[in-house]
Length: 285
Image (tube, rainbow, N blue to C red; front, side, top):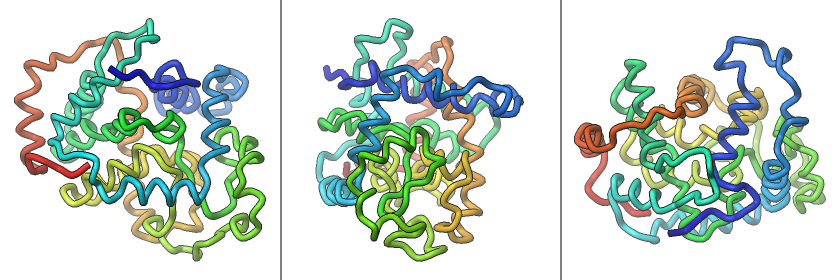
């Protein structure tokens, strides 16, 4: 069994930090009513963002796309991938003994209870499967974290944006204009976002899911855009239309985890049938 590497004690620390940063969606209070998230963030979370912002360069992202997007690592089905992810063990986490499959089912069951379409429920079930990158040896900062464009100026709306001072791309004038290597309104499909589980899973699953689900998977960690309003100048009309689905998914991603343990055994037949409705028996990863 493989445990995720430092600086985070466990990968869920990043998602917990998101819920602390964006509590307004859960409470209805305006952001100004909450204490400063940055002042409260744990040192391990700050260190995670320092590493992420230092190393996520255009060169790094392009190299990871060349390495992973041929999808030659292994062939496995969706449920098999969930079981594979389940071997990612957080031995250092004293607060939960929920498995990765149980976490995935919590999100899916919350969406199901909300009366959403079957493809939406399935998206909730699988949206974090790209975290198997950890099991391929990738460091945490190359698996999770808020995503953002590389190849253009880093927005000050990205959390801990001051850490980009150590990113080599900051010293390249060609990459530090508002659009950088991109054209205004080019569309996000033409933009390279920082590498992580979102982009990886999008490429694994994109041929089998409706377009709103593709956007949910690919951009659910793109908080500077869907929660902070940044990078609108790179979007096209289709992006703006589809981002309503990303925003609809966001509360389920952030606030569906609780202590209630889903009954995996009884729920498995439903989810295996749902998976088979959209996916073949094996996919390339």
